[in-house]
Image (cartoon, rainbow, N blue to C red; front, side, top):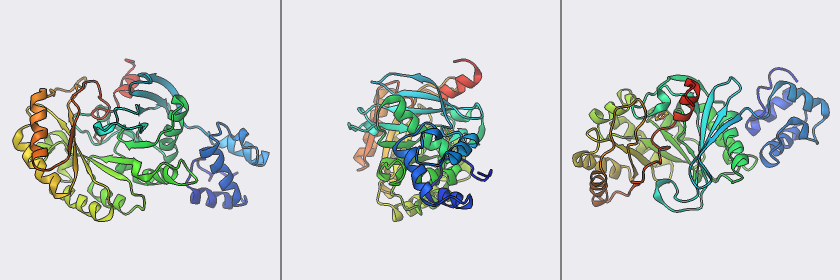
Length: 354
Ligand code: SF4
């Protein structure tokens, strides 16, 4: 094998192309995909229907499993965070959310996995620990998909709902994200239904338009957190580049291509974005694109100054939305911090405080 075979987890067409370049028959691609995704081989050696020479050449150059499990926090009944180490010794987190209560407050039997898409993040949203250390690198498609395979092995549960809400801005890693989406949704891959996959973004307008062109009927969630430019800029620096009006124009394009309701994520922060007036503006925005709103009372992040509003203020905010005909969910229980603040575990590990 030459050095042009970059890693084992490729899309079906990439794999076919590379095997052809190596003078291997095309059916080897299907065999390798079957071993990786269906039989869940842990080593090249297990792939008994590949010629031994091919197996050892692959084993020499490409680790089949790019992630190493380092630590689990949480238990079966709660959210479990897995800290995973990458080949370059960096860390990422993957979070498994229990079947019930599920995301967005609906009871369900879903096993939701929240995956990371980058090491660190360049977007610096003010409520989020992932941006505190800046951006290091994109995850490869293989590193994204391996989080699912590893989480299933560690938990013994089948992941049937996937959210790209972990560390990183998935749309800033667009090529690897779209390749990972192919691996996750295809019959030759993990076969998770596209409708059970949510990509969450801070609002990168050009990439939202590109994502709308992908064939998969995935869901889209927007980290909105402010209904107007003045409010949103206090929380989301990305708003300077892509203001609210431009973002909503892109969301209208999304609506014209996909038939899934958009979710607007909105962390309620006392004195910043949680007034009834701001709820009124949010209601108009949400109605204009027929979106639902997921309200998340702020949870304290070490090193950040903001405060959670009291429960009455949260409920009053929600009522403004529902009175305007907008579907809104609000969870007042404390301790469900994974939606609001990803990357805390990894940050502690890298700072040596874990
Ligand atoms: S919320 Fe997402 S986009 Fe914003 S800093 Fe955190 S990881 Fe980056």
